[in-house]
Length: 191
Image 1 (tube, rainbow, N blue to C red):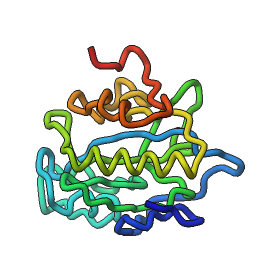
Image 2: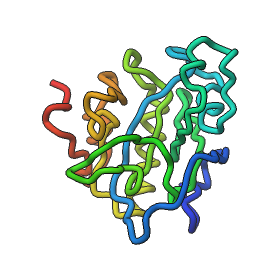
Image 3: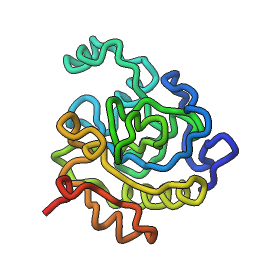
Protein backbone atom coordinates (compact mmCIF):
# COMPACT_ATOMS: atom_id res chain seq x y z
CA UNK A 1 0.00 0.00 0.00
CA UNK A 2 1.26 3.43 -0.94
CA UNK A 3 -0.26 6.90 -0.81
CA UNK A 4 0.44 9.49 -3.46
CA UNK A 5 1.04 13.21 -2.81
CA UNK A 6 -2.66 14.05 -2.41
CA UNK A 7 -3.45 11.02 -0.29
CA UNK A 8 -4.87 8.53 -2.76
CA UNK A 9 -4.06 4.90 -1.97
CA UNK A 10 -2.76 2.76 -4.82
CA UNK A 11 -4.54 -0.42 -3.65
CA UNK A 12 -7.99 1.13 -3.14
CA UNK A 13 -10.74 1.52 -5.69
CA UNK A 14 -11.37 5.27 -5.88
CA UNK A 15 -15.00 6.39 -6.10
CA UNK A 16 -15.11 10.17 -5.73
CA UNK A 17 -17.52 11.62 -3.21
CA UNK A 18 -18.65 15.23 -3.67
CA UNK A 19 -18.91 15.54 0.12
CA UNK A 20 -15.56 16.96 1.19
CA UNK A 21 -13.71 20.23 1.46
CA UNK A 22 -10.31 21.66 2.38
CA UNK A 23 -8.80 21.00 5.79
CA UNK A 24 -7.98 24.14 7.80
CA UNK A 25 -4.58 25.56 6.90
CA UNK A 26 -1.64 24.11 8.87
CA UNK A 27 -3.70 21.28 10.39
CA UNK A 28 -1.88 17.99 10.88
CA UNK A 29 -3.73 14.72 10.41
CA UNK A 30 -3.33 13.24 13.89
CA UNK A 31 -6.37 11.01 14.46
CA UNK A 32 -7.88 7.91 12.86
CA UNK A 33 -11.59 7.35 13.51
CA UNK A 34 -13.02 3.84 13.14
CA UNK A 35 -16.71 3.52 12.19
CA UNK A 36 -19.15 0.85 11.08
CA UNK A 37 -21.84 1.24 8.45
CA UNK A 38 -24.28 -0.92 6.53
CA UNK A 39 -27.12 -0.01 4.20
CA UNK A 40 -29.85 -1.08 4.28
CA UNK A 41 -29.58 -1.76 8.03
CA UNK A 42 -28.10 -5.20 8.82
CA UNK A 43 -27.54 -6.00 5.14
CA UNK A 44 -24.08 -6.36 3.63
CA UNK A 45 -22.68 -6.42 0.11
CA UNK A 46 -24.97 -3.99 -1.64
CA UNK A 47 -24.28 -0.53 -3.01
CA UNK A 48 -26.19 1.46 -0.38
CA UNK A 49 -23.05 2.79 1.31
CA UNK A 50 -21.51 3.84 -2.01
CA UNK A 51 -24.77 5.52 -3.01
CA UNK A 52 -24.92 7.37 0.33
CA UNK A 53 -21.36 8.71 0.06
CA UNK A 54 -21.89 9.79 -3.57
CA UNK A 55 -25.33 11.41 -3.01
CA UNK A 56 -27.10 8.86 -5.20
CA UNK A 57 -29.18 7.04 -2.59
CA UNK A 58 -32.74 6.43 -3.79
CA UNK A 59 -35.28 6.94 -0.99
CA UNK A 60 -37.75 4.70 -2.83
CA UNK A 61 -35.35 1.73 -2.75
CA UNK A 62 -35.75 1.01 0.97
CA UNK A 63 -37.94 2.57 3.70
CA UNK A 64 -34.86 3.40 5.81
CA UNK A 65 -33.37 5.46 2.98
CA UNK A 66 -36.11 8.08 3.40
CA UNK A 67 -34.39 9.16 6.64
CA UNK A 68 -31.15 9.73 4.68
CA UNK A 69 -32.61 12.13 2.09
CA UNK A 70 -30.46 15.22 1.74
CA UNK A 71 -27.72 13.88 4.03
CA UNK A 72 -24.26 14.91 2.83
CA UNK A 73 -21.65 12.59 4.36
CA UNK A 74 -18.48 10.83 3.30
CA UNK A 75 -15.47 8.99 4.59
CA UNK A 76 -11.95 8.49 3.40
CA UNK A 77 -12.01 4.67 3.35
CA UNK A 78 -14.60 1.87 3.35
CA UNK A 79 -13.59 -1.74 4.00
CA UNK A 80 -16.10 -4.33 2.80
CA UNK A 81 -16.70 -7.68 4.52
CA UNK A 82 -14.42 -9.45 2.00
CA UNK A 83 -11.60 -6.93 2.56
CA UNK A 84 -12.21 -4.92 -0.62
CA UNK A 85 -11.06 -1.35 -0.03
CA UNK A 86 -12.78 1.72 -1.46
CA UNK A 87 -11.57 5.30 -1.07
CA UNK A 88 -14.03 8.19 -1.41
CA UNK A 89 -11.95 11.23 -0.43
CA UNK A 90 -8.18 11.84 -0.73
CA UNK A 91 -6.57 11.88 2.72
CA UNK A 92 -5.34 15.45 2.30
CA UNK A 93 -8.96 16.61 2.02
CA UNK A 94 -11.52 16.79 4.84
CA UNK A 95 -14.16 14.06 4.60
CA UNK A 96 -17.46 14.54 6.44
CA UNK A 97 -17.52 11.44 8.66
CA UNK A 98 -17.37 12.63 12.28
CA UNK A 99 -20.15 15.20 12.60
CA UNK A 100 -20.38 17.00 15.93
CA UNK A 101 -17.32 15.63 17.68
CA UNK A 102 -14.59 16.24 20.22
CA UNK A 103 -11.29 14.48 20.88
CA UNK A 104 -9.13 15.49 23.84
CA UNK A 105 -10.67 18.94 23.95
CA UNK A 106 -10.45 19.55 20.20
CA UNK A 107 -13.77 19.96 18.43
CA UNK A 108 -14.52 19.36 14.74
CA UNK A 109 -12.62 16.06 14.40
CA UNK A 110 -13.11 16.07 10.63
CA UNK A 111 -10.48 18.82 10.52
CA UNK A 112 -7.65 16.61 11.79
CA UNK A 113 -8.78 13.02 11.23
CA UNK A 114 -9.07 10.28 8.65
CA UNK A 115 -12.29 8.26 8.69
CA UNK A 116 -12.31 4.51 8.11
CA UNK A 117 -15.68 2.79 7.75
CA UNK A 118 -16.01 -0.98 8.19
CA UNK A 119 -18.95 -2.69 6.56
CA UNK A 120 -20.67 -3.99 9.65
CA UNK A 121 -22.97 -3.21 12.53
CA UNK A 122 -23.12 -3.12 16.30
CA UNK A 123 -24.56 -6.65 16.24
CA UNK A 124 -22.16 -8.53 13.97
CA UNK A 125 -18.49 -9.51 14.35
CA UNK A 126 -16.12 -8.15 11.73
CA UNK A 127 -14.25 -10.50 9.37
CA UNK A 128 -10.62 -11.56 9.37
CA UNK A 129 -10.25 -9.95 5.93
CA UNK A 130 -11.45 -6.62 7.33
CA UNK A 131 -8.95 -6.70 10.19
CA UNK A 132 -6.11 -7.58 7.81
CA UNK A 133 -6.89 -4.64 5.52
CA UNK A 134 -7.56 -2.28 8.43
CA UNK A 135 -4.21 -3.11 10.03
CA UNK A 136 -2.29 -2.69 6.76
CA UNK A 137 -4.12 0.56 6.02
CA UNK A 138 -3.45 1.88 9.53
CA UNK A 139 0.26 1.09 9.22
CA UNK A 140 0.41 2.86 5.85
CA UNK A 141 -1.40 5.93 7.15
CA UNK A 142 0.81 6.11 10.24
CA UNK A 143 3.91 6.12 8.03
CA UNK A 144 2.55 9.01 5.96
CA UNK A 145 0.86 11.22 8.57
CA UNK A 146 1.65 12.23 12.18
CA UNK A 147 -1.10 10.01 13.63
CA UNK A 148 -1.12 10.25 17.42
CA UNK A 149 -4.40 8.53 18.30
CA UNK A 150 -6.94 6.02 17.07
CA UNK A 151 -10.50 6.18 18.37
CA UNK A 152 -13.96 4.92 17.60
CA UNK A 153 -16.78 7.17 16.48
CA UNK A 154 -18.30 6.45 19.90
CA UNK A 155 -15.24 8.00 21.54
CA UNK A 156 -15.46 11.31 19.67
CA UNK A 157 -19.28 11.54 19.76
CA UNK A 158 -20.32 9.76 22.99
CA UNK A 159 -24.06 9.53 23.53
CA UNK A 160 -24.65 10.24 19.84
CA UNK A 161 -22.79 7.35 18.18
CA UNK A 162 -22.03 3.73 19.13
CA UNK A 163 -19.76 2.55 16.32
CA UNK A 164 -17.63 0.68 15.64
CA UNK A 165 -19.69 -1.20 18.24
CA UNK A 166 -19.16 -3.92 20.82
CA UNK A 167 -18.09 -6.51 18.24
CA UNK A 168 -15.05 -4.53 17.15
CA UNK A 169 -11.99 -6.27 18.62
CA UNK A 170 -9.86 -3.39 19.89
CA UNK A 171 -7.38 -5.79 21.53
CA UNK A 172 -6.79 -7.65 18.26
CA UNK A 173 -6.35 -4.39 16.38
CA UNK A 174 -4.08 -2.86 19.02
CA UNK A 175 -1.86 -5.93 19.32
CA UNK A 176 -1.14 -5.71 15.57
CA UNK A 177 0.05 -2.11 15.85
CA UNK A 178 3.29 -1.20 17.54
CA UNK A 179 2.77 2.45 18.31
CA UNK A 180 0.37 2.46 21.24
CA UNK A 181 -1.93 4.72 19.24
CA UNK A 182 -5.19 3.38 20.54
CA UNK A 183 -5.93 5.74 23.42
CA UNK A 184 -9.60 5.28 24.11
CA UNK A 185 -11.36 6.86 27.08
CA UNK A 186 -11.71 4.44 30.00
CA UNK A 187 -15.50 4.81 29.86
CA UNK A 188 -15.66 3.33 26.35
CA UNK A 189 -13.22 0.44 26.73
CA UNK A 190 -14.77 -3.03 26.70
CA UNK A 191 -14.71 -4.94 29.98
